[in-house]
Each structure stands twice: as C-alpha cells, then as structure tokens.
Length: 237
Image (tube, one colour):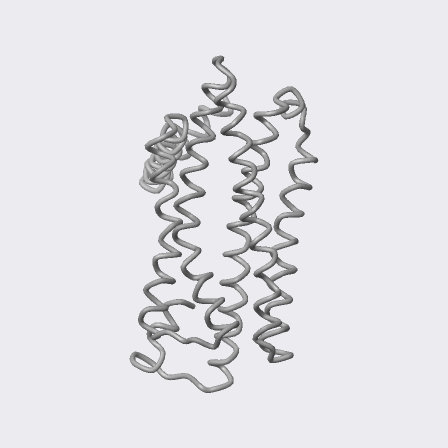
C-alpha cells in the first residue's frame, strides 16, 4: 500500500472510489500496526518489570496468562484503530480521529518510561548474577524501544500537527518519514543479533535447517523411479 501511494499519480492512475478505499485501508492498517508495535513495547516493559521485581512469580506464569495478556494488547490496538477509522472516514471528524489514538499512545509512553525507570532503580540497587543477566537483556529491549520510538514519534508529531492544527507537510517528506518508520523493523533483528548470542544461534540454525531441507528436496527431485522403489524396499525391510 505504501508503494501504491508513492506511485499514485506519477506511475499509475486509479479511480476515485478505488483510491479512497485504498487510502482508508492504508490509514487504518498503518495506525493499527503502529499502535500494536508501541503496545507490544509497553507490554514488554511491563513483563521486564514483573521479571525484575517478582522473578519467582514471573517464572510461574502460565502460557494461558501470557496468551491472554498478548490478546488484550492486540485488542486494545484494534479498538483504537477502529475508532480512528470511524472518526476520520465515517463521521469526518479530524479531532475525533486524533483523540481516538493520542490518549492511548500517551498512556503507553507513560507505562514504558515508568517501567524502565523502576527497572533501572532496582537493578542498580541489586548486585548478583541474576540481576546482571536481567540487566543485559533488559538493556537490549530498552535499546530496541528507544530505536522504535525515535522512528515512530516524528510521525506522531506530524499527526498531531495535522489533526489538531491543520498543518500539512509535503507528500515527499511524509513518505520519507513513513519509510524511516517502517525501516525500524529491519533495525530490530540487527540489534538483537549484536546483543544476544542466543538470537544469532537461533537465526543461524533456522537458515541452516532451511538449507538442509532445500538440499533434501533437490535430491528427492533428482531420484529416478527405480531409485525411489529401492529406497522404499529398504524402508519396509
């Protein structure tokens, strides 16, 4: 959809109704994925706070509780996105569109700041191996959070300027900023790879497994019918 917006008018043309449908779909999907991303960052900060302050309870957390927590995070993002779409494209209210996501976003930012501040205070007071490992992992997640916010908050500022004050910027600047925001998804795996050896091992094993599967498929595709029959006889004894 982002590519469609970039090429619209210069590379290809579209009917007005199709264009409006695609733009509204892109706006809804964009606000949903952005809020879901920040919501997950806030959820991660709460999870790290829980693991730092109450490690014994954190280890006893069930999978069902984790799934419910994740479900709530995505549902809140979806609800805010639906309110945004209804306000902007149905009720035609720019202020309603702004208030559909801005208070929720401010709450998420407050949760992130408060959680990592509490974690920092706790980790600095403690001095043991468990806290050292938690400190490194938490610092990695904190760096991911900072990079994500740096990539996302300029778009938030533009949204506030547009919906609250009616200030518009050029389409080129908006698209470049959007690309910068989307590029954050590429930075996160690189950061994880540098900071977390286990993540590097998991990615390496994933690609190695995929390569082995491809080799096996090639070998199977080059097997003749007699070879397949002979292999089948060996399997059945």
